[in-house]
Amino acid sequence: MRASIDWSRTRRDLFIKCPRAWYLRYGHQSQSNASKVYPSSRRPWDLMLRAMKEILIERIEDLREGKQWSTLLVEHQLKYALQKNLENSNHNVNKRYSVALLRYANHRMTLLWRCRIIQQLVRKQYPCWYVLDRTEPVSKDARQVYASPDLAILIQKKWHLIRFDMQSAPKNPIDELEANAMVYWAKQQDGFPQRELSYRLHTIGWRRGFWHTETYQPTYQSVHQSIQLLENDCRAMENMYQYGRHNLTLLPLATSSKTCESCSYRSHCPASEGLLHAQQEQKLLQLAHSSQSSKT
Ligand code: SF4
Image (cartoon, rainbow, N blue to C red; front, side, top):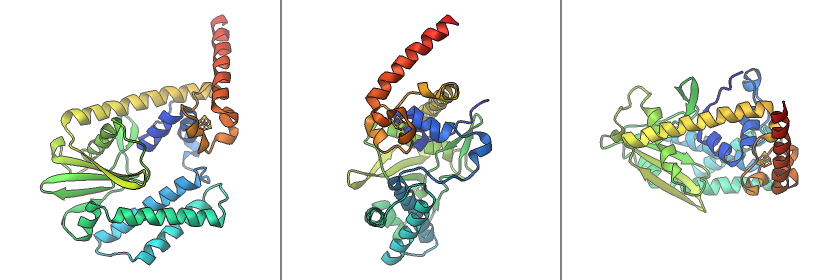
């Protein structure tokens, strides 16, 4: 059976942090159960970020139609989206924690709305802009690539592609290549230019208490490198998928115990009693496994 490996930044991020967790979330699903809806095993914190993103997009869509939300409406919508996400999860979150999550979401949303680019949209500074569907993939060699920006704004003959990250990882040189995947996506849509220099990229992400905006100028080379990154990732994921199918116990564990702290698979993982211990045990298992295979 061949794996259907899809690429997105979220998948890539998890794959790098812990191949086992990636396999359990994305690789383990068979084609038949992939479409079924199961309660989410994601952490309440991640569900808060997801709720925020949903409401941000709804709010910007309304802005496009000329409707502005009041503070009260923002709070109400966030509360509703958070409740909905928590109800569809297998976590029991007490009232106090859910109120705290809502407070975080409100705070971040308030600050995000003050970002320059959003304020320019509020002031109707640009006549041509679109809200895009992040769940809309493009195909690459029979794989689905989720790399759509959240917004595309035409500013002085250049398309500015914007992505919002509700929680950014620390800055990394690979960020620019990941951002360039937005151009790969845009070039496959009707109405967007083919020249890489016709774009400008912005990522707006929450990091260490602030919204940070990174801006990149894509070139032919940077987009090409981004596609190579994508291909390498998919190849590595496919190999890991095959490996996991044959021997889940030997799948590489997390690279840092910090990842385990927030992992929803922890209770059934060898790392539940400590990552270091589990890694040592896995090394012994690997040795036993390779000496057995050399005998056969
Ligand atoms: S508990 Fe740690 S090692 Fe186990 S799946 Fe989760 S992140 Fe990976």
